[in-house]
Length: 481
Image 1: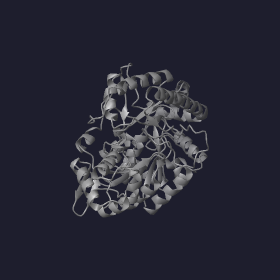
Image 2: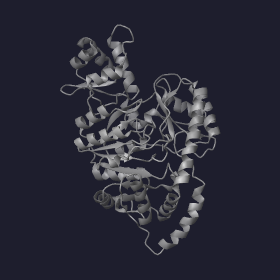
Image 3: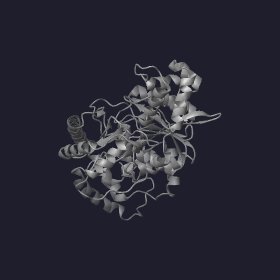
Image 4: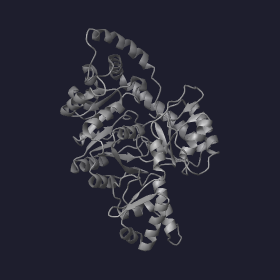
């Protein structure tokens, strides 16, 4: 099924994206079609994007309308565009059925020989064992009760609220709902605010499991491409205005997978755009604690707008095995979430909540060491990539736990398949895409110990040597975190 036409890209914006598409040669429909096709494969022109009218684009490019019409015809022949009378033309992706089948997942074996670069999750910190012992003592106080806490334990909610207040966003415990991870938190918000068939704006690329939640709820994602430096706020604002999404899902703090952070000015502009279009936004702060800049952070999005519904997680900061997350929102909205929660679960395990409360009581030394460990491993990974895969390009992230690497050709899914034969598990760029593009990109986490990272890159370089451009196979549907 072809994507429904979505946001419209203006001719001047498409000209900017195309850049020097002529390459010094005489303009031709073939050159124009190939340049547009590359924008689609790179994810900078997401499927569903409405293309400018032929006359408008011809004027902006300073070419004949006939040349533009022939380029569009080439794109339609190759299934990179579709047209309908009265609706104009929009971007598509060849074999969209394959794109839809790449999602879901199988679970990897426990083979210790496989180096897993598909999941950006650190191991548990040594402080966890002591925290478990303290939590067990606190558990005795809970044993006389029924154990069901749909809001979450009051002691944990108070600690989470205190952390928001310390960041400049006054918060009381009634504004916090404890969930079974940030993914659960997002799913609860989605069920509460969005009906099947409605639109949700997302960054492109974005976190794959958020896309899975949208697909599972029958929601239409509207993708706004990220630039090399982060967010295109002009395009994001225009897309909000044109598509009127019911909700936005955004990661302004160490975006997954690119690792960039939106500055204070950008947050202010984003908040204004959300307010003008009456759009609420889920702000995913899962990676907020993995700040590698050493600089004063910008204020949280919740300090710029009441339309920010913040979700957080203990998974990246402490340990994924805790399976704990939370929502910060208005008291009224938290009550709405609780009323709908019984459709999915009846609360969060008590012992894990006690354990997280203990970790939060002694969080700063632990998190400081987490950040230092991440910096060291990032340097090891970057050095290994420069030595063994020098043709790859990447921007050093502001924070988070992964590098977003341009591998130089649309081979990412083929590379992921080849890497399996070398006992390396990868998440190709297509997994972070709304409709299976981003074939030039690979996410490479730096959560393994340094020596294992070097070994993984050496194996990956060997796999890359066997891969040549060609039709992409289905990307391996490994679970991603």
